[in-house]
Length: 110
Image (cartoon, rainbow, N blue to C red):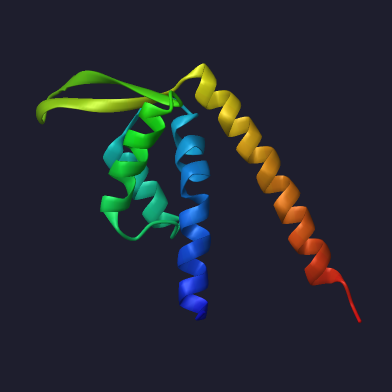
């Protein structure tokens, strides 16, 4: 596996965690999620986000509401549900455990 492929796989694995983290801050429009993910270099392809948001909605982790826009049609804003908040907390714990385990391996000397 190349280094680039490794990075792509890691990003894919962390995408749900990062998207839920962004949504947990409050109502957020899809393009704002995409912008933050791009700035963080977590996502490159926008088409990856839409199926994920649909899966998160179907799982009950996020919901959305439509808001009128001055710049055109109404916009869909995502919000975290209580179930999504609990799921995010579990993902955060898993991330901390994984980070600790990987760092333990990295720091181990021969």
